[in-house]
Amino acid sequence: MTYLSLAFLALSYFLYRLFFFINHKYYGKNNHYCYVHLQQKIFDKVSMIDDNFPNKINKGKLLNSVNNDVINIGDMCDRISELFISILEIIIVILIIANYSLLISILFVIFTIVYISIRNYTDRKVEHYYRKQKRSVDKYRVLFSEITKGSSEVKSFGIMEPLEEKLKKIDKEWSRAYNKKRTYSIIRDNDVNFFTYGFKILIYFLCLILLIRENITVDVIVLIIGYFDSLFVSLRKLITTTSTIREVNGAVKRVESILNYEPYKIPFGEYFNDEIKGKIQFDHVSFSYQNKLILNNISFTINPNKITAIVGYMGSGKSTVFNLLLRFYKPNKGNITIDDIDIYDYAKEVYKSNVSIVNQRPFVFNLSIKQNFDLVDKNSKKQVEMCKRVGIHDFIMSLPKGYNTILREDAKNISGGQKQLISIARTLLTNSEILLFDEVTSSLDPETALKIERVLQDLKKDHTILVITHKKELMKLADQLIVLNNGKVVGIGTHKELIATNKYYQELLTRRSPSKMGVFRNE
Image 1 (spheres, helix red, strand yellow):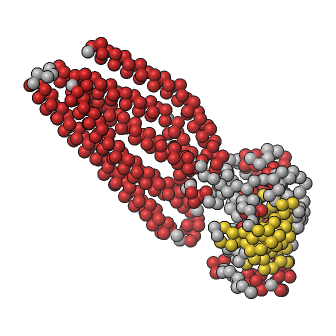
Image 2 (spheres, one colour):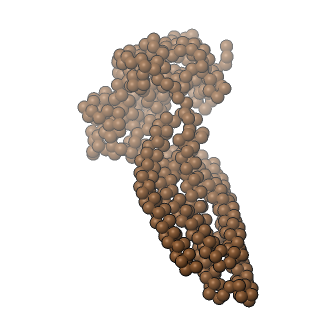
């Protein structure tokens, strides 16, 4: 028996060190893969997101996956090693006890199965409600972040109360999940111990009977009780490790859902002619999204060295025109061409460098002004040249650190107009021939709006300028206006021509408040 015990001990030591040797060998590789390659894969997937991505993957989930989940997955080697070691310890204990008493070893096996079953069930329930808590935290984090970022709008519109109600609702969801989780935690961490103590008393009682019948001796009883305690410790370690692995498995599934997301892809062509002049044509283009007709057989031409404005009420299809030009989607019918070449035939490098957009609320990074420009073009002279052209250079130079001034998150330390001009300068660094401006003056003061209008006038000398606007000043400034209504072109011409002949355009100009805007009546 001594020799057999020594053999078991030697085997356990050998396997114990073997598992840790394998763990140490692959732990570094696994962590390096997770921290570098896996994060890069997530970033690559995010760089291809489309409009449907936020419906599948919320922002909070994405942030948790990039930060916490990747780190947890990197530690999986340790958890798997601990799992194997715990299983090994349990098997060895049961084999040793079987050599003294087969009956007691069978009871050990029954105890192991029942204990693992109860703990596994309660652990799953705890993990289920923990995930619900985490989803609530994700939703709370996203909404709270949006409230803080849009604090000025929240105050001006007086919508803090309904937003607080939404936060409270999320809090209630979290509380319900927390209370359920606590219920199963108590069963797992407290009630299961009563079962353990009861089973231990049963082992004592059985040992007493075997002692009376002289089937075992007192020293064997001490051995059995000691090994039962050892079995219990190993089982607790096994359950803890299993629970951790289950949590990491949740992280794996979250990362997997991001990596398996298939964005809407439109392949580029091979037409490689970078001498683009900027003539745009929509030829009988129709487009539907989620079974809803957005654009209905529209045709128009946009010429270079002119400002063309697309106008119409909300939902008329203005933004869809931009989305199609940016190749986010492909029309169901018709053709879109630039310089008489289908936009889907252009090579990626050519198209991306010749069509750029400036949004209503452009995003700038929490970097210096120069570093924001460097992301597009690191040529300092060219940066200064573009800033002078849009009229923001003098302002930048008036700052204490000039171009090295750090822009706080979303450029909150400068005005909206200054941010917009910096964004336009950044866009010009792309050397794009076709510039799309989406409501760039809608939230600016009249003086800054006038400055941007002058910039547009200057840019049209060597660009194709296409703007979406509801501002009368920009409509009057445009060389050509395209009026959309319910996805149809209902008017093309100058401001003077349309104001004299087009009732849709007349109605659009006479509406005072955007909140009262409806759709045009069908002719």
